[in-house]
Figure 1: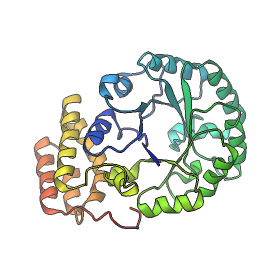
Figure 2: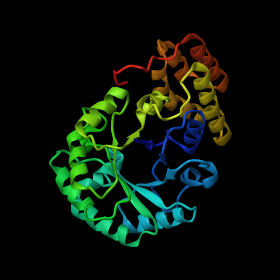
Figure 3: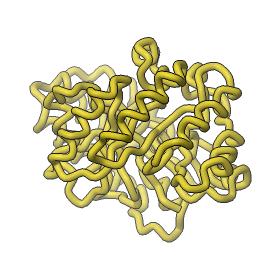
Figure 4: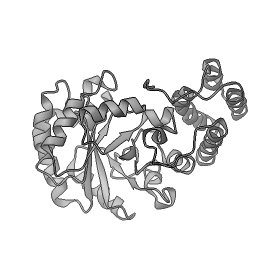
Length: 320
C-alpha cells in the first residue's frame, strides 16, 4: 500500500511537509497546494523550490481551466527538475467552482475534454489528475470516466464524492471500484475519509485491488496514522514529546518565514483545528490558543495544553 499526503490549501505547505517527514514520514508522495497563476507568486514558488523539498517525493498541483495557462505553469515547473504535475479537478469550494475550475470543470465535460486534449498533446511533463466524480449526480461519473480513458494519465486520484457533497456524507466507494474496472492501465489512488484501520479495511472490502490511498485530514488529526494503517512503515509513535517537538519546529518555521506575529498565529491556529483531535479534554486550552494575539500568549496556551492533556488513544476502529 502506498500513502500520499493530500494537498490542503494553506495547511500542507512545504514547512509542514518537511517537518512531518522528519518526525513521522511513511509518505510515498507529497502534493503541493495548488498553483493557480502562470506568474507564480512567491508563496507558490516556495512550494516547489527543490531546496524546500529535499528528501521528499513531491508533485506540484495546478488549478486552471485554460490550457495555455496550464502549459505555461508546467514549463516553469519543469525548470525546477520535476517530471510530473497534478491537475486539480477536485476542489469543491464555491469560489473555485463558480469559475469552472477544480471540481467545477466537471460540469462542462466537452470543454474539459478539449482542455485535456491540448495539455496532454503539448505538456513537457507527465500529468496526473485529482478528481471528484461529478457535480450533482453519481450518474455523471460514467461520462467523466470515458473522458479520462482517452488520455495517458500518469495517475488518477479519485475522491469519490460529488462537488455538492463537499466533505460530507459517505464517499461513493462503488464509483472508485468502477474506475478500477474501467481503467485497468491507469494507476489509481483513493482519497476520502481514511482515518483509521477500520476505514481502510472497509475500503478494501469494497475495492480489494486498491493499492494506494491519499490522506489529508486523517493525518493532520493523527500524525502517526500511517503507522497504524501499515505495520511495515517505520514511523515514530505520537508521544507528547514527539508531538511537541513536531509542533515547535512548524511554529519556528512559520515565524522565520512570515512577517509579524499575526500571520504566523493564523497559520498555527488553522493547524490546531486538526491538532486538537490528538488530545483528550483539550477544548478549554483550544479556546485560549484561539484567543492568543501574541507569541507569548500562544506559547503559554500551547505549553499548558501539552502539560495538562493526554494524547488521544488512536488504536481504535472508530474513525476520527
